[in-house]
Length: 535
Image (cartoon, rainbow, N blue to C red; front, side, top):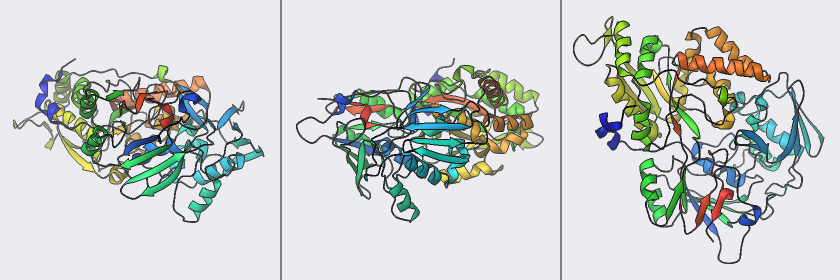
């Protein structure tokens, strides 16, 4: 594997910032989280965006950091398994068409409303009004909801679906909201969070902070910290300085700090940090078959020209491992996931291009064929500094073999909308979902993501699309594995997606306030309950 030496100036000059924050289960014992005598215990955290809308299915990535502060979900995902939260247990019928949830008793929303089956029903009906529900069959396709008693809810479906429970694990989507707040939202009132979580929304000061106070009646026991204050600090350097000055107590997730900043902070007295045991998501290069990349030889040459080890080292100091599959570790059927069958080989890439008729006839370093130059556009969301770093590295690598890649940064909404325009991009960098949402969401929503416009142009496209739909309507393990292996193999073998690296979610903290952070089985949303305080 090649070292970084081929791209030293570029790698050292690139800014390094990564994906969004995470959480982990398997927390401290309740006793560790109880308040003790002494001064007021306040946890100060930073957010890159204002926490001005914390309503499920309307939250944006900058607000994810506080989702677990005020909300709970019915279930969560730990170490490859769905485990109880507000739902204590469940059964799925033999035909896979009925999910029965048995709810935890004695839980109340922050406004005093009882958490019960009718409250869950109100949440599901409210979620169905969101366009996002199309990608969550557990919500979007439910045909009937029964509440035979206060703590039992039965969801019925026309078809079985293997992701019935994993769909319920999304912290930003499946958070349980008070029925009163649902009614207030529907009446057009301000969206303030009213959940069942460990902290209660207290105040929002525009441009400054959002404050949460301890839920003394939290069903797992009152948390250790009496308050959590989410301070709005949009600038990366300012966030780092705020941590150094003890204005905040931690930075969480690669969106809040670059790997360079993490490394320097880790070497600072009074600071400690850690990475999760495995990656939180995978970072992939997605190719559009409608333009010049409809040529399979060009797609293969791109895959062979991308040195993932250099990307790992140059963008993340090696913290992000090289990825060899499009899906996230820990997800369902991970052991069945085919790996990439190619490796970095620019010499082979050049031979493939030449054999396909792509040659540099005028010595300008760019190959041509039939009067057409081998140039294409890679789009990235403008706020994603880390993907800009990756794009710059790839641009240099492809230039080495005679391909010219332009980089176009776009506002996030425009970038997403471009997925539906076959002429809007040639490549883009996008990330897979988290472990609980892969492969259910990767293939469940693939028609609506950047891959969607290319699906009709795949070899064996009718079968591929049919299997995507079948994948969402069965729960037979043997058939699911068969379909899963086929879908991943076709995706990777035809170079629809090229896996790059595994995204990590670091934490760095002030040891005067925090002794440890206990990562669990999922890392995407921060949770103060998994902090071990420094006594």
